[in-house]
Image 1 (cartoon, rainbow, N blue to C red):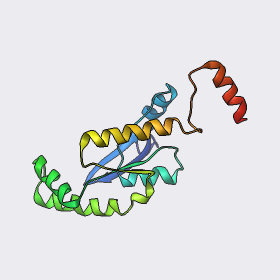
Image 2 (image 1 turned 45 degrees about the horizontal axis):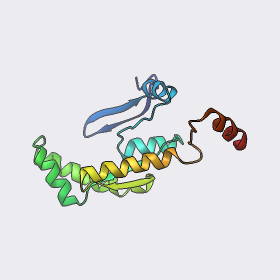
Image 3 (image 1 turned 135 degrees about the vertical axis):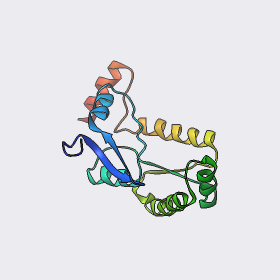
Length: 145
């Protein structure tokens, strides 16, 4: 798929390959649906380089100690893997300037509320706004031309 350019972006992370399939993105957007992608910093760098229109949100841990506790608490990785993830985490945090927003995930419910607020605000950004009323939609489009 990478050789056929079927990915919007792809990267090798922690010795595994990950990517975002173009056709899935295009089909969802053509239906007028919102789309949330979970990307790492490499993915965001790739999309920014392509000037891909999106709203980029960095989910930040409350602290590196808390990140280590969360990774350890999963019980899915060895200590050396956790150490590597923490190193990568520090590097990724240093690239948070690539994003439009930062949400510190201290409390899941509050983080979800913040994400939903960002989505609501971005839907009402003048460049994205879609009026429900057909008459207003026609006027709106005339005003934009």
